[in-house]
Length: 128
Image 1 (tube, rainbow, N blue to C red):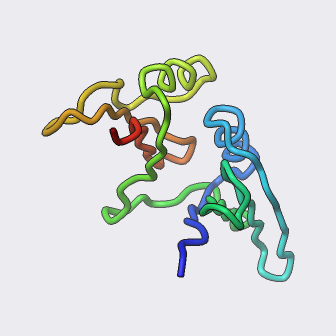
Image 2 (image 1 turned 180 degrees about the horizontal axis):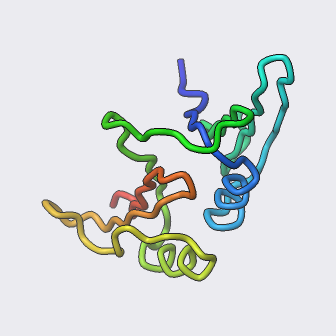
């Protein structure tokens, strides 16, 4: 078994695709509309889906906003240099929630950014 994808519901598919491709550097791998179900799916990632898990963005036609609830935590992305990634994301218009630095109870370098729908994304340095 392996994880195939994680799904997030988004209120504006084009805005979200732009964030994940232009700000976080993912690639749009496929997209399909389902007129009878009134939704569109877009799959994004850094590697081909046969090699790594993808991010599925689901746009339910006519729904522009979702409640976050209290169960969702965050997505996590490993980056070579958290400090440089934060600056690159900021330069591309991304929202920084927590600046790069050591985590509260340890030495791992982390940062948090937010996507256009309010989903938090943790940036982590590679484990040494």
